[in-house]
Image (cartoon, rainbow, N blue to C red; front, side, top):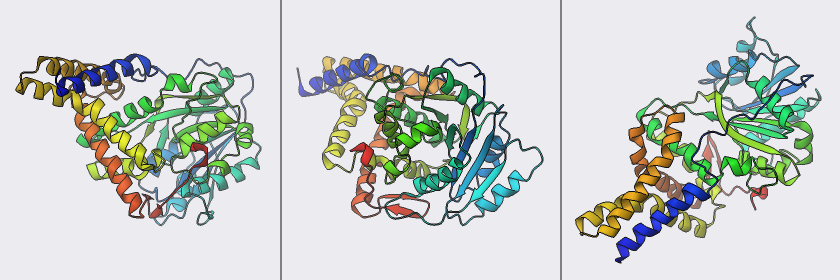
Length: 391
């Protein structure tokens, strides 16, 4: 066979292995596990780190304030050095008469040495929340909107399944053309890296969470030293899940049905920043891992269409057929995620183009790191962040 045909065949074999051997990552059936109402509803503290979130807060915070929870629950919003009036807006939203839960707003100041901004905010919020002695902590981002029964269902799942950490990957906004092209693939790639079935298997080594919605047993947080043990992590949700699992906790991660992100990413540059700010941190700032990732993405995602069309042009039937089959399997595995996001299935064959964008975003993340810009987010830059649980 020609070299082109060998590349196409290897790519096809990779896709057959991904289809059957990577925890069925492409399926979207991992939703909140079976649950029933507990005999007594435990106290819950909801901690919301917020930095310059005035744009999204009117669509997210009221959904927390209106939670229909049978037990005691309180919200602690940590205003992390905002310059847009986030704290004042939160207080104004909580002053409405229809709020079911009380809100406390604190402003802890700039992060201490060795802390990333979000984890410093979580540290301060969790410390205050623990004075109320809650059984659970709900860690949720300021751009996440919850249906009225969200907290109740999370607690019921945690109690019924005896879980220390229950996390739902919020359904991200998909409205603009770029969001339709990039966002479903973001969750698809995440699930490929961290197959939910593996995460949800007791005793498994794979661990991850989705930082937008994490219900964490307070006892488990203390045992895993959250957030102190992960204070330098840029990818904090994965680090938290690993710390909880390593300390003996049971974790669960799945797709959300009634938890949504309201943050818009209308332009490609907005999505680019979202991905590139942490992509190289995911690779532990390792040039060899970066090289392997680039080669792997090219072989798995770019080779199928390239070998198909090159095989047709060069009259190489093996390259053409193997490339076509690999592309078909790839598109087929993407269909469930497109259905979950209620997007046209015609986007499935475009996954190689989206993968190329992610490849470029990852390379750009490394370039920014070596330029000293690192993980830049809302005016803060972490040039060489560390994440000890990832090491």
